[in-house]
Image (cartoon, rainbow, N blue to C red; front, top):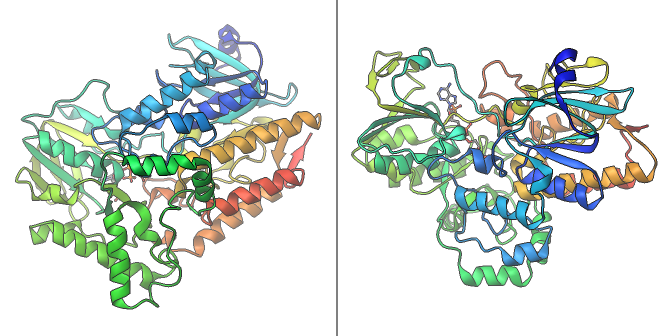
Length: 547
Ligand code: NA7
């Protein structure tokens, strides 16, 4: 936050109805709806481009893990009819083009300030306004006043950069998957090290292996990866979907995950099926690819024995794909499948058959230090490297919000309010922080849902809420502490009924040292959540104070 003196020097814009932080898909859609409602709205983004996560994650191989006909906006029929995806799972460049197209198509550019970073914001109860401080493109101080503040900052936008001892002394480039250089990086002839084997590592490793002289993958926990079977989008599938796109979107919205209506979840328990039936079902879903394997039976994420059957199936696929038995064994995860987000890959396991790729286990011998010329492990192994890639993920869901200086009523800091872990009501609003909305934050199912569907639902809810407030002549909405406590209990009990607490995932904050261990997303399905949010609005916002 700026001091009072600094704030008075800052360039002050005219008061806004709505300040939107983030110009990714959530920010773009929020701006579009706000303008349609006649609100004075501005979206700011620290990046020099719209696109959010699809601008930041430019690493080779970055690709969406939900099919593009589903992972795209459904709110506008001409948009969904006219846009053509070239591949089944679009790559980052195409997704970024799509974000730019949306900004152009809906005339949003003049409502977006790029290279403009929020530093902090405080709720001014006397003026019933958010006072927000930031920096403009030239580094000059900026100040905005807005009745409503929408944090469309994304759940995966604060990179996790572990503090490996000696990292700063490394002589070569250190790249992070979520902050990749704009110019293409040439790894030809180099010895490259990759730390991290989550979705990002799994996508970039096969491509780096094709370039590097030697690629060493430092693995702390092996990941379960299912094949994407990516390829050109089939014309017949596209035509069939577009013939009733609205119906397709509606069927997806009725799913727990907001996608996958083409291949609905299998009913019943994996334990009730015969071994042959199970194998046939897993095989069929493996051949189709993507997340569908986890919904082969209804109890895979709630029954440990059912889950073990799927995990065993994937380990058998890994052993079949990887020639060296010792490497294959090291690549076989032992934790609950799906407990960490499942990865969707293109040739990941087979990459370890290349003679220039080596897998190193850093669970048994952790990284002791990074030196000028490489990396030393606890057992004394030395690895000489020319470049180091960190695919170490994100301070997920809360990281971006807590890195800002956000203060609610009476100067209450968000960091204090969330000291024991995040809490809010409906996954949308925080007690003590009036008129502040969070899209894709804790307490909502976004992490388990097609994020485009989740964004549309939350942004539409916020838009409706703003309209309802105006119609009722109210200025301010804020959840009650009681409603917030009840919602937190709901989030916790929903997670406890599943297998999601059985491993260290970013859902739990367990990937960031010192972060409170609390399960952050809401399990229970998109359709149920969406219906509940609608009911709250319909009933006049019980659980909220309107003033
Ligand atoms: P993830 O899924 O959080 O993966 C990060 C990887 O980095 C994972 O293998 C971690 O091992 C590893 N990691 C993190 N910190 C360390 C340290 N300190 N030492 C060694 N290894 C470490 O991030 P991604 O970017 O791949 O994907 C995030 C989401 O983006 C993904 O779920 C999709 O939704 C899209 P660990 O498993 O913690 O032992």
